[in-house]
Length: 320
Length: 94
Ligand SMILES: Cc1ncc(C[n+]2csc(CCOP(=O)(O)OP(=O)(O)O)c2C)c(N)n1
Ligand code: SF4
Ligand code: SF4
Ligand code: SF4
Ligand SMILES: [Mg+2]
Image 1 (cartoon, rainbow over the protein chains, first blue to last red):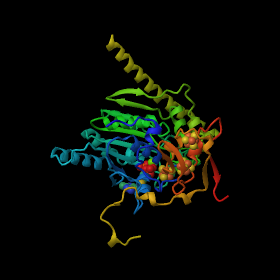
Image 2: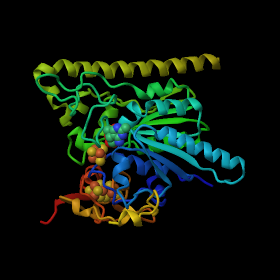
Image 3: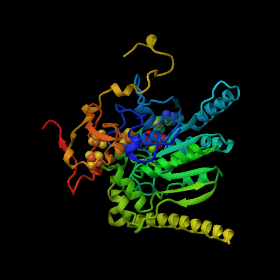
Image 4: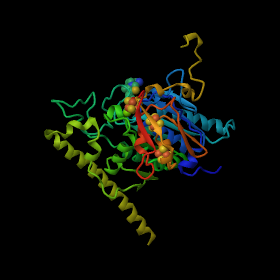
């Protein structure tokens, strides 16, 4: 079977596997990512979905927006569910009862992935299942009304880190889950956004091609939680990348490639200032938090650059 | 709505049944396509969260107003022709 080229004209001839009529908010970033993921796949997909906005709103009884076999799982165990399904597939394949090549994806929000589903994810990755875990990271527990998660960035106003006279929003920086997944030593780990559709789809294809576990972290904006107008999903994702708040990079068998380096790295305030959840940071007494936010971005970005340079130097040395 | 005795066991059995659900009534703003400014880039199609832009044989068609929620992403991302957008948002009911 020939692969569909990653051109919109060609892709648009494929069947859309996530229908309209789902009940995610107007302008939600998650379904943009999911549509692209399913369009990228060139083989049958079976998915498990941890509860969260995506799961709830695409499957309100008696409707489903999914045109693939899809399994609801609890909040904390999408990775366990999908590894069980993958193990069953392997067994049936061995017995000759399935001959088709099928791939397995687990979807989870940041709450379901960084926090409550973390041990299940870590276990599935360590056991080496042939699965792809995709986190759609909207940086808080949105479905239950915008609670902070360990993916929520420093200073964000959420209902459990409320900005006011006591605290200026979330007091802790977010944890770097993508790097934690790299530390699992799995064959493929990547970070992307739906604004960068070609990057996203290339990464999904690589992740599906790998024989073994793969993890993709997708920044998926949420206008309800980020406090933005409904037309900002793509613009804000681009700003996240252009400020290096959310760099596009991948690890193939442990080797880092930065997929996009902004010609001019924008200051992180460009990303923060369009979002109501950061509004309070722009009052004079909170200026130090803007500085800290910039320091965090700079530190992580420079570490990536250094690491990539190191890989390149090492490869050059080998060639000589 | 079905009573519990009529429920199928454990699952929604029809794939993609949400397609028959109308979310067009959510709209406060309605996108309008201006075909003469359209360069057929299909950015609107790849970025629409609601699969509400129809495409046939690789060419953009009309909006699917049964599903479009009026978010305005397509209008925001539309490059249009010579600085003129091929999608504009207009208030519903006006
Ligand atoms: C064990 C358990 N605790 C709490 C909940 C309630 N709950 C449902 S969805 C959700 C938040 C999901 O957050 P996230 O994974 O980030 O997805 P999002 O809704 O932001 O897309 C919570 C707390 C639950 N379903 N199960
Ligand atoms: S609350 Fe946010 S993530 Fe949830 S459906 Fe609405 S926009 Fe999407
Ligand atoms: S306004 Fe939003 S939902 Fe409607 S077609 Fe445009 S992108 Fe899709
Ligand atoms: S984004 Fe604009 S120019 Fe491109 S296909 Fe859609 S309507 Fe036409
Ligand atoms: Mg979330």
